Length: 105
Length: 105
DNA sequence: CATATGCGTAAGCGGTAGCTTACGTAAGCG
DNA sequence: CGCTTACGTAAGCTACCGCTTACGCATATG
Image (cartoon, each protein chain N blue to C red):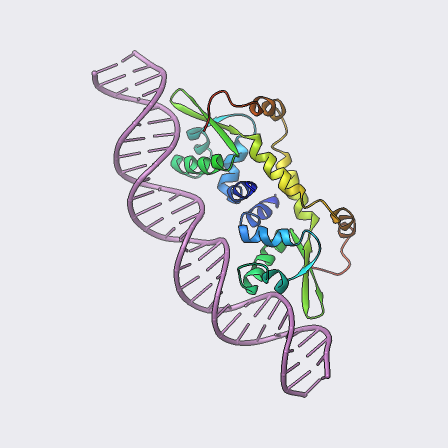
């Protein structure tokens, strides 16, 4: 049920930008903010939302504070999306993937 | 790059509720609205946002309009999340999954 | 052809999400 | 010990998002 917080969190573009910056290792707050068009406090606030959502972890490193990806939140999201591929969706997928016949859109 | 629209769309709780109602087959707009605490136009608006995001498809059925899941959008999301499990994240995951040592949180 | 059903769209409103600036605090450094 | 660095938090403002009501349109039905 906690996947909801993770979905809400990654619903914001700035938050996704921050999240993606953590792909290749832990980073400091100001370091991330330097690469984005928002202030450092803004990044700090976003990181806390993601922390509550279980998407990131943090730990101190001198005067700085390093944030890194938290696999726990990612696992929640993966599990949630997986529920949509279940049931009769497999053959439905096959039917839907051939160029549409009904001209939807 | 179009995964962004899908993430934005599923960032809203009401939209997720609608999305989940489509798990087991196509549904009409009013039918969905009847199960949710929002008006039918609200559901209609949400469905269109999700349609632009590639998350749902629609087609007419008499005077009604049936909406169903669109595997295309789901695939976008799955692919996006997958990028976070790449690289050195595998062994990082192993390190992060044992009860934390640094007392983060 | 008249009526009913089901839906999309327009218009408008209120709450809140995201941002900024300002301030307080903990840890390294000379 | 002052001073700097790096961060979190508070306060406040604005834009936008999600909602409702009202309306118009297309399709079935008798």
